[in-house]
Length: 341
Ligand code: UT7
Image 1 (tube, rainbow, N blue to C red):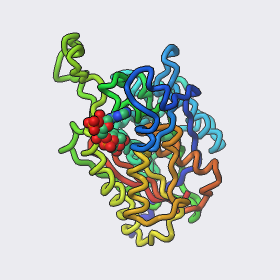
Image 2: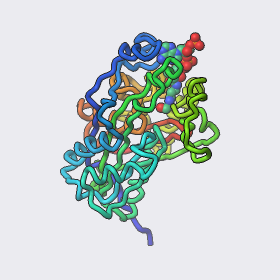
Image 3: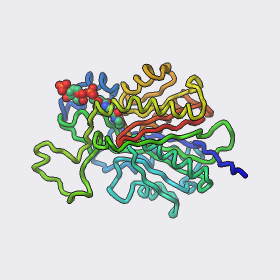
Image 4: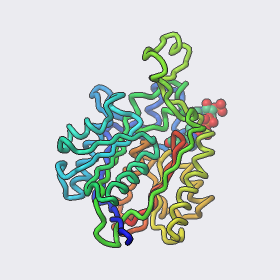
């Protein structure tokens, strides 16, 4: 006897970015950089950063994105049975940010709340986890969030400019439920990691390996281990083939030709990475790859749901369209989700 598993579909989608717009030229008040360098190397024109005086955390941005996703799904917070929260910029070291979202949004006490990291691939991993819980019948309504407040944790001096000009704050949320037809459902998800390059993109400190104190002498010497550090070129070199592989893997596993793909939603780390993958490897026209990094910078776990949200709002994808989500980021981690929207 074979048991047919259920399928999962996305029933709600929401995105949110803070109001404060930080243009490339605005960054010059902290560091030696230029609009021309940033646009040429990354495609970014501006990003949104939270208002630092207001103590806004990832959970606060997530609340707004989740409200939009709930409204899109025609649901209220008490409908949610499980939260999967992906962030590398948690409100606090522990507990995970998901419980703060649960409390602020009014998701019922007793619901399951799971925090994951997985950085830029966080939304892909979160979606895949949700898919498994729904397929097996354990839950019917799962909220998956990617949210980041990067701006409070960046080295804004010239020393940190290669990293700090890239990152933006934002949140994206999706609600998953059992599929009801063959029009709209998750086809497959593909998750990967390689810890050999973990230190190529990381924030080393605070660390449980050491007593939690910042040595002022170290900071003065520029050993800023509490800020994110990136070997940009190394990361770039891995990002291009891994993103492309992730797309090919999803298509090949399902015997779907690239020609059938309506839209690729790549992680928004660098417009040059996405254009290289699009033009040099996949050979897709501009209207089949969506980018919004120009407006938001790299919002890590939030970037894919935010891009999908904007893409759908602009009418470029609709229910039933074949969409591939693909990401690569710190860890390294990478992966993809193929779905009929
Ligand atoms: O989301 C997670 C995954 N992340 C990624 O996929 C990011 C991958 N990497 C990248 O996107 C690129 O490596 C960066 C955008 C981070 C950097 O671009 P790059 O072309 O690799 O530049 P670089 O780091 O090799 O630096 C080139 C030059 C250096 O000057 P010299 O040594 O040639 O004189 C840097 O000091 O550009 C300088 N530079 C800057 N100049 C102005 C670095 N950052 C800046 C800046 N403004 N913000």
